[in-house]
Amino acid sequence: MAVQQSYQLYSKYVKEVYFRGFFFCVASLLAADEGDFLSLQHRCSNLFSEREPSVVRVKGIYEGAERTSVQFGTGFFISDKGHVLTTASNINGTSRVLVEFRQVSYPAEVVGYDVDTNFALLKVSALPEGSTSVALSSSPVEAGPCTMNLLMAFPRYCPVSPKFGMLAGSEGYYENNVFPTNYLRANWLAADGEHGGPVFDLKGRLLGMLITSLPEIQSSYVLPAPALLRLRDDILFGGKVKHGYVGLEVAQPARLQRGDIVIISNIQPNSPAAEAGLLKGDELLRFGSFDITSMGDVRNAAFFARPGEYVTLTIRRHGEEKAVNIRVAARPEQYAPEAGLNVSS
Image: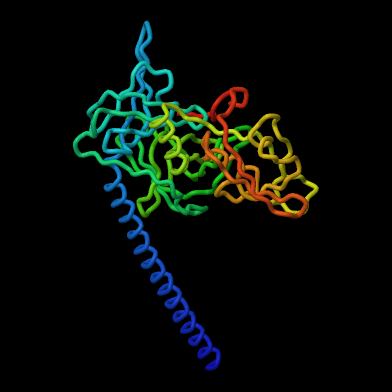
């Protein structure tokens, strides 16, 4: 009996020590998590305060014979001269465009737009007082899956608001939609009015601009910052976006054991690729500064190749690597897509 009582007391003591230890560990973890959470919250709050003065509401005015309607979207300043980036779907077909900052509307000029990428460049006469601008960079930010980010945009009639999430990946197509370059996929769903908003990482660097949303998978696509710069420069200095063309088609044959081999499957007659001596069956290793391991890599590399430029393609033919210089041509009209990315705004 004494032994049994001693065992019961010992068991009770062990359980108390265990549960006290367990709850101490849990409390410690919760305290640490709370500290991390508050630190993250503080960073997001600071980032929103820093970048919010660059974000504007874009209002596309449709003036019909019987009534006038307004399409709401988002944009952001990218220069001290009043340039604004937004989506083409926010302004395409409008009678006039207004940019609203701090509840004051300013007339905006449509400098140019590109339906393929759903990109538009606007301009107001000058930066409104109190506003700031976001610098574009050609250097891509390292942003893979789980990169935390903050969208800043105007959902419908609400004030500019933050939306926190993660990146889920980078893709060159979705179902039947083939993108002109690789887009970043975020794991948050954009609301009406938010398209055209800037997306930042938690260091305050611009990841890109919100282009379209995918309600069926609760996600959205973001056009990366280097692509924004490439499109802006074309419109700003050439009046329109000029897509390049080299005249080759590629494939990844299923019979090959390695999945990262890209083969030239066809060469268009009288194309830059044909004139440079590329052949069907050549393995494409590098396109300019881009390594090629998938067909999406080829499309992405071609997006950054401007007409008139020379680009070096590295190929493997009969086991031997070879560098081939190609002069990029302007994309012929027959190769232009029938429609741009299927967007919702």
